[in-house]
Amino acid sequence: MPTRHQLRGMFHNSEGIRVDPVPFLVVSGLGFAVAFSFGPIYVTTLGASLAAGLVVAGAAALATTAVAYHRYVWTERPALRRRSRPPLGFGG
Image 1 (spheres, rainbow, N blue to C red):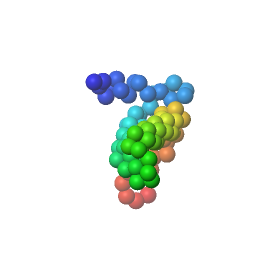
Image 2 (cartoon, helix red, strand yellow; image 1 turned 135 degrees about the horizontal axis):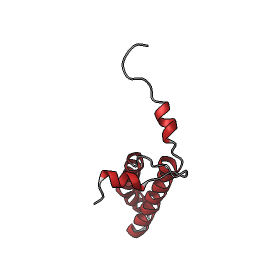
Image 3 (cartoon, rainbow, N blue to C red; image 1 turned 90 degrees about the vertical axis):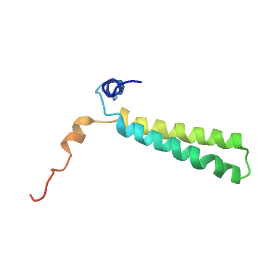
Protein backbone atom coordinates (compact mmCIF):
# COMPACT_ATOMS: atom_id res chain seq x y z
CA MET A 1 0.00 0.00 0.00
CA PRO A 2 1.53 3.35 -0.99
CA THR A 3 2.04 5.97 1.68
CA ARG A 4 0.40 9.40 1.49
CA HIS A 5 3.69 10.93 0.27
CA GLN A 6 4.07 8.32 -2.49
CA LEU A 7 0.43 8.73 -3.53
CA ARG A 8 0.76 12.50 -3.74
CA GLY A 9 3.77 12.11 -6.05
CA MET A 10 1.84 9.88 -8.46
CA PHE A 11 -0.59 12.55 -9.69
CA HIS A 12 0.71 15.26 -12.03
CA ASN A 13 -1.27 17.73 -14.12
CA SER A 14 -0.67 18.46 -17.82
CA GLU A 15 2.18 20.82 -16.91
CA GLY A 16 3.97 18.23 -14.77
CA ILE A 17 3.09 19.87 -11.45
CA ARG A 18 2.10 17.55 -8.60
CA VAL A 19 -1.54 17.88 -7.54
CA ASP A 20 -3.56 16.73 -4.54
CA PRO A 21 -5.15 13.33 -5.35
CA VAL A 22 -7.89 13.48 -2.67
CA PRO A 23 -10.64 15.24 -4.71
CA PHE A 24 -10.12 12.82 -7.61
CA LEU A 25 -10.16 9.77 -5.35
CA VAL A 26 -13.30 10.91 -3.51
CA VAL A 27 -15.27 11.65 -6.69
CA SER A 28 -14.12 8.42 -8.35
CA GLY A 29 -14.98 6.34 -5.31
CA LEU A 30 -18.40 7.90 -4.94
CA GLY A 31 -19.07 7.47 -8.66
CA PHE A 32 -18.16 3.80 -8.41
CA ALA A 33 -20.34 3.30 -5.32
CA VAL A 34 -23.38 5.03 -6.81
CA ALA A 35 -23.02 3.32 -10.20
CA PHE A 36 -22.83 -0.18 -8.73
CA SER A 37 -25.46 0.51 -6.06
CA PHE A 38 -28.21 1.78 -8.33
CA GLY A 39 -27.13 0.89 -11.89
CA PRO A 40 -27.78 -2.87 -12.00
CA ILE A 41 -31.10 -2.54 -10.16
CA TYR A 42 -32.30 0.22 -12.46
CA VAL A 43 -31.25 -1.59 -15.63
CA THR A 44 -32.88 -4.87 -14.55
CA THR A 45 -36.17 -3.06 -13.85
CA LEU A 46 -36.05 -1.89 -17.46
CA GLY A 47 -36.03 -5.55 -18.53
CA ALA A 48 -32.34 -6.19 -19.20
CA SER A 49 -30.27 -8.94 -17.61
CA LEU A 50 -28.08 -8.56 -14.55
CA ALA A 51 -24.98 -8.91 -16.72
CA ALA A 52 -26.13 -5.96 -18.84
CA GLY A 53 -26.76 -3.98 -15.67
CA LEU A 54 -23.25 -4.67 -14.44
CA VAL A 55 -21.80 -3.62 -17.79
CA VAL A 56 -23.77 -0.36 -17.71
CA ALA A 57 -22.68 0.28 -14.11
CA GLY A 58 -19.06 -0.39 -15.04
CA ALA A 59 -19.28 1.99 -17.99
CA ALA A 60 -20.82 4.69 -15.77
CA ALA A 61 -18.10 4.24 -13.15
CA LEU A 62 -15.40 4.37 -15.82
CA ALA A 63 -16.89 7.53 -17.33
CA THR A 64 -17.09 9.15 -13.89
CA THR A 65 -13.46 8.28 -13.21
CA ALA A 66 -12.34 9.68 -16.58
CA VAL A 67 -14.22 12.96 -16.08
CA ALA A 68 -12.93 13.27 -12.50
CA TYR A 69 -9.34 12.67 -13.65
CA HIS A 70 -9.65 15.32 -16.33
CA ARG A 71 -11.20 17.85 -13.95
CA TYR A 72 -9.28 17.23 -10.71
CA VAL A 73 -5.88 16.07 -11.99
CA TRP A 74 -5.13 16.86 -15.64
CA THR A 75 -6.48 20.44 -15.76
CA GLU A 76 -5.83 21.31 -12.09
CA ARG A 77 -3.87 24.52 -11.45
CA PRO A 78 -2.69 24.47 -7.81
CA ALA A 79 -1.40 28.06 -7.95
CA LEU A 80 -4.84 29.38 -8.88
CA ARG A 81 -6.53 27.41 -6.11
CA ARG A 82 -4.14 28.69 -3.42
CA ARG A 83 -4.62 32.29 -4.49
CA SER A 84 -8.42 32.17 -4.51
CA ARG A 85 -8.96 30.96 -0.94
CA PRO A 86 -11.00 33.36 1.19
CA PRO A 87 -9.40 34.68 4.37
CA LEU A 88 -10.19 32.83 7.57
CA GLY A 89 -11.87 34.55 10.47
CA PHE A 90 -14.53 37.20 10.86
CA GLY A 91 -14.51 40.82 9.92
CA GLY A 92 -12.66 42.65 7.20
